[in-house]
Amino acid sequence: MTATVPEGVGLSELRAAAKGCQGCELWEPATQTVFGAGPETARIVFVGEQPGDQEDQRGEPFVGPAGRLLDRALGDAQIDREDAYVTNAVKHFRFRSTGKRRIHQSPDAVHIRACHPWLDAELALLTPEVVVCLGAVAAKALIAPSFRITKDRGRLLPRPVTLDEDAAVAQSWLLATIHPSAILRTPDEERDKAYEALVADLKVAASVLA
Ligand code: URA
Image (tube, rainbow, N blue to C red):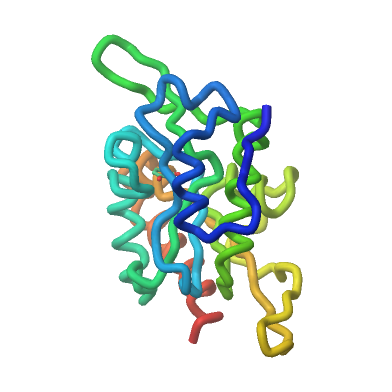
């Protein structure tokens, strides 16, 4: 199963093409493709796991509870969300239904692989100075399948060097941190500490932009 990603097009054409993606079976029960959002000129890109229930309904990434927590953490790390591009490793909501509720299910490797061409195409069109992986799914997709968030979070890792239009060497970075949803699931007594650790990691990412 692979997606058919158009070549030589811009971000808006890519977004339009992704609407019809049937690269894996997740498209069918989902309401819609949730493509990335934000300015093409974003200096920082956030990559999450997959849209949640609210994102699936609204068609935008990180607009539910995890997105609100991310917004607060970005504010505390002095990163302007308006200047950030936000997307996901998998662009359809995977869930199981229990009567009225739709319960999030993590994507399998096959879904992450099938969706990877969209993420690659997005990142190729954007020229961020830093890409932040939110959680293990994004980190495994973009850094290495063996990547462990607990061990290697908050570290700036070099992305391949690219040449910008003026042929000057532009270095960019990858950094992985905990997913905001994991903080929402953290027991009350440990949640503040987990949140502060997220903000500390985001400040490392922000230091690239300073
Ligand atoms: N969690 C994610 O990883 N992405 C979203 O867009 C929402 C919740």
